[in-house]
Amino acid sequence: MGIKERMARASDKFYDRMRHADASTVAETEPTGTIDDLKGRKYCVLVSYRKNGQPMPSPVWFGTANGKVYFLTSPDGYKVKRIRNNPEVRVAPCDSRGKPLGPPFMGKARVVADDEVPAAERALQSNYGIGRRIYTAFSRGVPVVYVEVTPT
Image 1 (tube, rainbow, N blue to C red):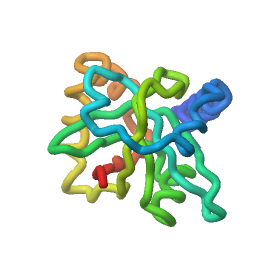
Image 2 (cartoon, rainbow, N blue to C red):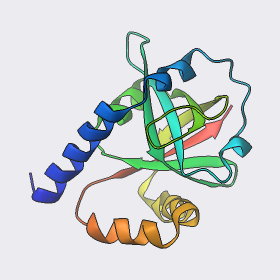
Image 3 (cartoon, rainbow, N blue to C red):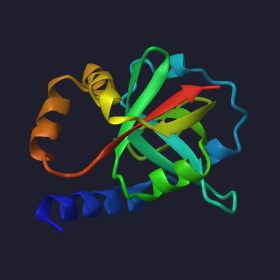
Image 4 (cartoon, rainbow, N blue to C red):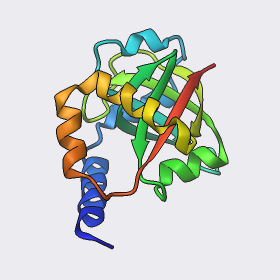
């Protein structure tokens, strides 16, 4: 494993430890939100589910396009494993630590195909501008996948 991959995993573990205690409440909150609640936000909390049904909240950077939410993550990370097992998710606006800032909405998640990656990256860049390009420059070579969430 290269230095960039080790740094990416360390970053993920750091953010997991820093997650706000209220992030898990998204799984129990009535899903009355919409994708429009994400406008002007930099983070959303994604709740995916373990095989035993336990909800797992994860704050993520995201972008929106065509009525869908896009984010990226590690291809062998737990989020991808949970989504492949159960594509049902909840999404809510949040702060950088995952503290919910509005009600969640329900959605179906999937890993995007390689030919859809440019559109997913454009969605993220549209939400972060130059900051996204700088982040991307420093993380070149770290394997990632893009995930699309379609509100249901």
